[in-house]
Image (cartoon, rainbow, N blue to C red; front, side, top):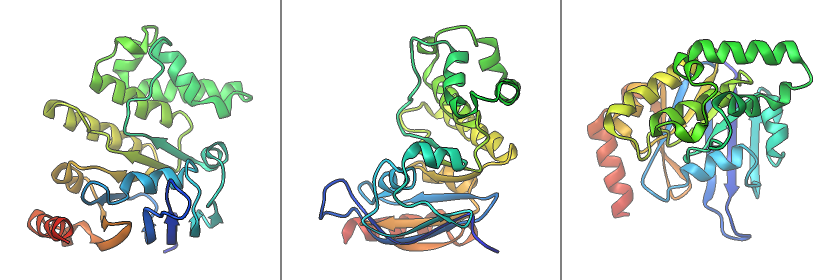
Length: 241
């Protein structure tokens, strides 16, 4: 089976000559939830930012649905069918919930019918947002703000969603809700590449796992090969060097 996303020998970083990703290779199969785990500073968020075009790779290949996308601008990558949910709750607090959703669907703006269908589909998927569609996004709770961040990316029905630390800073009671949102995105047709420090919950929803450290893949395989005991031991090895 041809992978939806195939990364080969990827080098990237924030400063010229200093690479955070050090020859990383990874594949994401269509319809899967692929989870990237590892200690702080391993390069997990850097990977997602590079895939979405916020950082430019210094070397390597990134192929999405058979096309080379390494080095493209974020708008071009989004237009291909890739969505990105950053770690921060990135809603526009002074805009209403509906206005935030409309911002998420801006690439559909020239097709009013498609735009209207997308908005209706997302509001049907997230009834709470439908109830609060005319309220400012700044009035939402942390969990609801995370919901809006995910829902906004779903406006364009992305083939692939890059999701960075979606449970960061949330109370435990909201973690299950966030994973329900990601499962809703999956059921709607999105493949998910997920970075999360909440390893136990992430593994429960994963199909495939990559553990990375210092910008390289340390271990990879189907989730059945990653019981918590093995993951804990691997991360301890990374921290101890």
